[in-house]
Image (cartoon, rainbow over all chains, first blue to last red; front, top):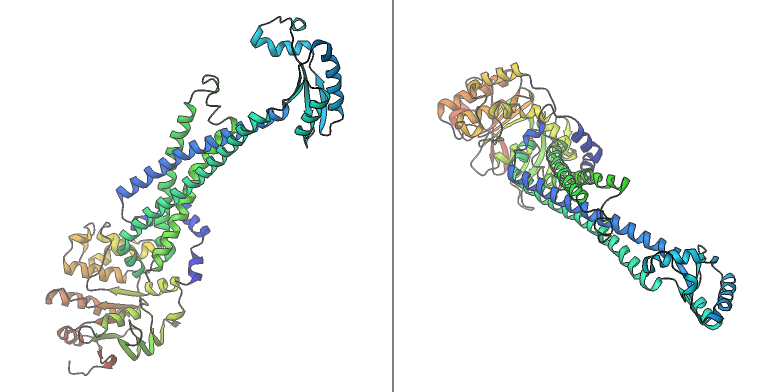
Length: 309
Length: 224
């Protein structure tokens, strides 16, 4: 086959062949293949089902990483625990130090009522904050570029030994990192599912084409163009992939919907699933599966047709 | 229509099966192609419908060099050439009528049902229109193959041992159909080693007899 002939089987032509109605029943030239058809539909459905979960995982971990990152950025505090006669002095020293630290926009000493609210879960309402040796808390707002936490920590150590910079990095950063990796894994899983679907449909299409070698030879003999033959196969496999994927996607979305909500699960699952407009994302799976079926069958058909003059 | 000039063909590089062949098939002509088994009759026919390409020499079909034809060009050529094989293949999942109409279907042309009915009647298969190909006898298969070959109204009909599996009566019936097609202006080329068939045809049409011998194409004598 010449390269120019391959170009005649361009995607636009095939797409027209796929979307145009087939009143003449040209597809009937390909014999029905019951078992292969069922396997293709089932495999496409199973892959789409898994893809929904991979997508849900990627989106959920993405949200998680984003939330933790935001909280991380918002929850830098300095805690001052010092003897009663030194605590005011050290608080002033820390506030001065924070004002002169590059990358800090604002440093706010939490008033007693806010500290009381923070302690409420442990001590109940009406905590006598003034009667307890409660540390002073200073909330820091960072600039976009952030500040040098290590340098500030060392400075505070020298100027106010009772002050502890708590930027939560030590325990949150690995979690954010893990969530980001999970998101990447989810996306990689989606790619692998797509690739596996393509491989599976290619194998099924190649098997169908090989089984119909005689049909193809007869069609070529009577003057059928490659595009006519290829379209008959491509249309069939694309439809199977799309139908199977639509079913698998619907099942997957149903399963995700039926998962316990975040509140009921006590945040354990951290909201695995879709939220708001996120429910639209899985609807892309059937068209993508159809596109994969289209590409895989087209490739297999062209390869096969090259062998038949 | 088909013109060959010093055409050679070989399946392996240095040993041509057919060598230095020159021939012109005119519209409305009737030719027989004879020769011993393995001489290259089928290969010659395959060259005519561009299933094979010449190794050397030049061949044009309907004014176009076959070597320069694209795959779509070859498909177009085959719509103008009807081919009947000894062991013609059908699509076994489609009824006989649909198999016969297949060239129209794959060309995107409308099937004229009354015309299809007439064609089935012409090859005496009206009663088998809904039958599946495996249900047909050898003679019925050959007539169905002939109907499929002519449904696109081709300019040239190639038949490769079309009567090889048929008894004499059935062979005569098929020959009669081919002669009728020739009388309607179609060129006919039949590869056969059946001399009786050739003699029977020559009583009715002006047929030239070609013979492949020693890798070359010769005009056979009139004493057949």
